[in-house]
Length: 441
Image (cartoon, rainbow, N blue to C red; front, top):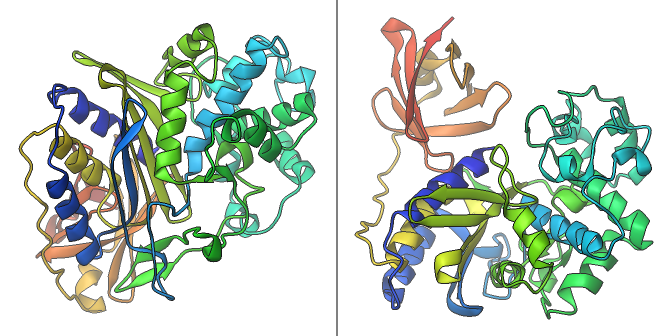
């Protein structure tokens, strides 16, 4: 959900910038990414497409940090949940061909799933099924790294209790898109990888886009990392787990071209594209849409292992911005805000990166404990790993924070700032433009 919030912030920035720019300062964009690379604040690649033609690309960091293999514009990254837009597109193609309808119930294919006779294809596409998000399974970290059969995944899905009645509300769930992928395979009698290739990547020459497998750095496929004094490689999810919900790998240019093709009417009918763009409780069909006074942006975000990704289509300018990172320190929000402002000629000052304070484990003790609030994020547990302070959000992410000033900590990756008041047993958290006071129990 953090990446969805990132998408909202970026969309707001883009829509409030002038959309009249025809030329942009590519040297300033280069300088931004050079700064991020030199300061070890990001690794990844960006691509900007205008009317289907790439007008800017830049890659920073490594395919493999240990072997010092540099990334380039041909480097392929795991794009995570951006995969869902591809899956939704494939489903809509079948609907265009009369092989499926939005009203088809899940019971047609998987009657064993709870509420299957009440859950429709549209409910799955819009995250309105009420099905438990299987990647929230308490044992997820144990089985995400190994091959999982379809039966094993289905057994987990069937055993989980429903979260709410179908169509009552919307709640993001990877389970929805896993099932959509299985339905695609049952209808087409092919694997998801074969369907993706035959319907999208081969006909439209998206040659770097494919259903991923074990990362192959010799094929210019990037590993993912987190930064702790140096780039530390992250565990690698087996792609049988995310499948149609998040298993695609691609270059940012290929992702941008896919969105250009989709919104140009090349991949689905006008009627289907219109339905994909219709918003209900934040979600379209495989898309997120954010309306503002000056227009609407569409796209999706993604995150898997240490990869994070974001693709935004701006209809008013027939423009696509895609950024995929395999090493996030400065969050995607900050990076894409900079890209958008520079592209549209808005005032923009490069971020300043001050060295973090070196604190001893003993100096972190006054901040430890469980803090609660009556509003989101409700509960945060502060722990430490040697000389590093760690935020553990209940039902949310776990991440380290660093200090640049006494009693103040932050995470550029998450976009969070925290100020502690140890004598008052409280902390003030700033995230996404909101400020929350939490009290230590």
